Length: 375
Image (cartoon, rainbow, N blue to C red; front, side):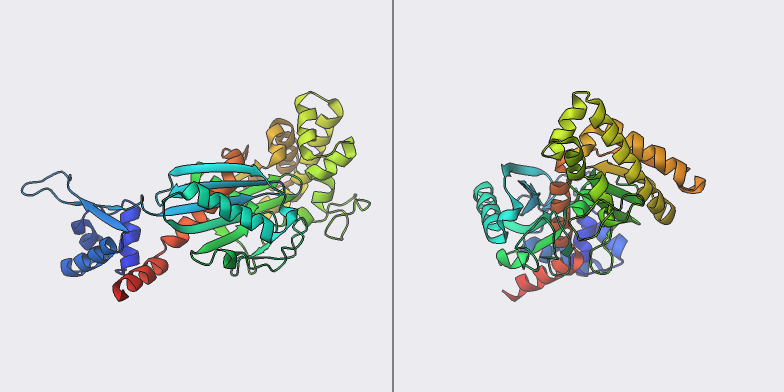
């Protein structure tokens, strides 16, 4: 430990607020600490101010992350919506916008809209990085969607290349929901599952406090796990009896003779008995899959979000009923199954966190400092 990136990590976390703190925590010589801090100040990443409490003599100067001149764009793309939030480097929201937008219109149309909206919100601010969530599988290393079923024209599209001037991080929206929920609502939880129940069904996994994507980025795709006894239910993936095909919002809507999951929610909120039964049964089916995951992964918390979580009393009743009945007692001894606390903002928050943590990573900061020194 001792690079400019390591020093900035200590400052941004609040672990070190003075040069003396940095020397003590890193073991670096004071001259080396001053060199690192001065480089970070020259790059506009850190500022040093007076105001520290004196223990005799001159008051120490305080170090802090310079947040105001660095703006993160967080973008949540759904099947029919686009949410954009701008935050500073400390995570404080500075501007938001939401529009109706069909993801099926394709990458050129959708990303052109995103760029226009981000530019409008930015004004005179400087864009530092972008995080984008999309409703489909993503090869995280490249930011390319991979055969997303509800995103025609997006397969293998190089999303980051559409924004060539800044770092762009792209991930599946459920992963970002898990990240946003974890950081905002359960920061001390080490193992968490976030289950999105909307038109489809997906799961984000936090393991040891970090988002787990698997080898290629497809971890958590529980919507296409087979549910026994429903072989007649065809799925958009080409298989049958997938969880999504029998318990997702689109499947419930078809069964109730309505157009969308939103209408299913409305029926439940109106007390429609048939809709109540359908949502409760969907919860039981989701619980069957989650019971296996609980036995396998042993999470501390299972969070349920997405469109159908708006009627979480009925959905969670079915999920809990099956999970607690089918899982091992040790796995459920301290398990909590709760509705999302971040709601519709979860994916946007997660996108912002993803971009911000990448930008502030020691490796990226070291590159930035090196570039500044070469100018």
